[in-house]
Length: 276
Ligand code: NAD
Image 1 (tube, protein in one colour):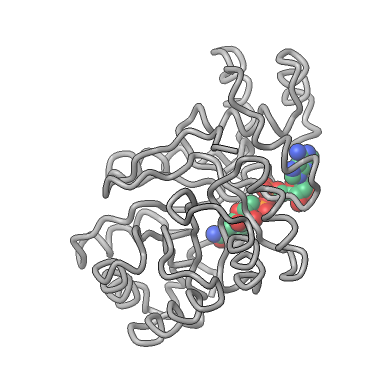
Image 2: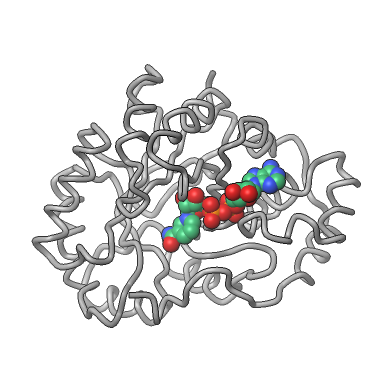
């Protein structure tokens, strides 16, 4: 099945599907089936990380899909404890090995972990990995504008992506504006608010009812219309399929205004200045 998902063009000219499949918290033995279901449903972008301990299973699912490598977009991330120039190069080799791939499409610094003071040096190793053609794009995750400023001062490679927590209850308007002004694509993690409460909010239910869609589908649609990349996670086959059926309708201005009013500026995850 060919992909139903449109792509965004990153600042290096590489195309990235606007919707992908996130695999955080799916154990390695279960991720094989979940990724296979996602690929079968039409997802072509997979978001894993060294810290998720499921790169091996993700790689196995990719290999057994039989899909041409150039139709897939695979992201993985550097674990915080492996930051530093040489340790990053070693960690990247180990990720590729576990994935069973020759290259990834996007390699991300998982968190800035500012207390370590290593993310700028780490990014130098990312530049080498990019120059060697082993990552088609490099980027960051959970970087605040101040961390992006440090990279801008020390590197000429603008991160292609910043993957940050973002959902209707934590809309991140300021970060999105900073990214847009620098040519960085905003990728939303926990786009469904981890399924904790957001999907039961009456406003979301009313918009879903109006469009004959589910709450998860209208939330994902909201992200897409904002210009975000989204990577919803599920291990339930029916939900994996539901979460990619988000392209045959449009939210209108009233819907977008109702979503805008849901912002509580409330994080579900850790604060990037503090996470070690
Ligand atoms: P999410 O917002 O994608 O929510 C996933 C949860 O929502 C599921 O476990 C399930 O309980 C529920 N759900 C999913 N589909 C549903 C549906 N159709 N109907 C009802 N409930 C549904 O949360 P997430 O997994 O935290 O985030 C998605 C991905 O983002 C992760 O898998 C991972 O790849 C990435 N991520 C990255 C970071 C980072 O630091 N870079 C942090 C967290 C997550």
